[in-house]
Image 1: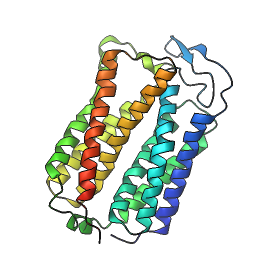
Image 2: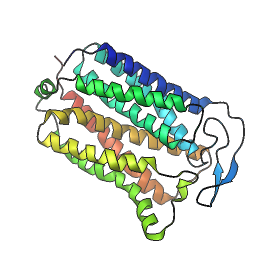
Image 3: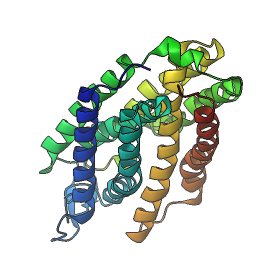
Image 4: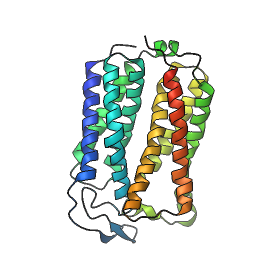
Length: 291
């Protein structure tokens, strides 16, 4: 592995700091106010959260953002700190873990910057997006990929991870249900509320799915880039499951009950995928030899 750069360390620390600041603000911003109703651009009556940082977000989505904040603050941030420390010590596994965690912080910053209603933390979201993006580029660019491939042991479950990637790539197509319904009936998704688009659908189908399939194919081909993308996608799938669970808990605490079919199709799918990703991630990292 190429020597860890000081630039990567600094950018990673900043990405973590901005991500943590955004998460803590979302969780602990003073909660003055109360829910209120507005008319959306689609002519429907929508109840807004009315309090805290997410006061202008819908009553349905504000708990979702807070659920993500809890995972970022109490699970993702400590793991990012661990990755920064181990990477600075020259650990190859630490570098791969760092790339995965930076990808999560990048995804989270993009989601906040584009999906959350305009609030005082827009600049924090922007800085989090910028630092995590350039840190991720630096982490991947400075990784000695041929040496990484040479350090993969025979215990690497190439086929199992590849099959998982192909299945995980399909799982995000659950978001197509709302798209197909709109195309066939002309009705906007009820959860769209006051928003004008679905950033999660765009990111997951337009980015996550292609990368998942690319990862699977490159792993089967034993290409070095496959070993770079695999931990990124495995960690992303782990955190998607954690985030979905946390979001559901926060929604339940807010008095929002999800229909059984939603729990099975949406929540259940991502939780099962997350558990499988966690098992494969352990096997993957154990298959990487240190110097």
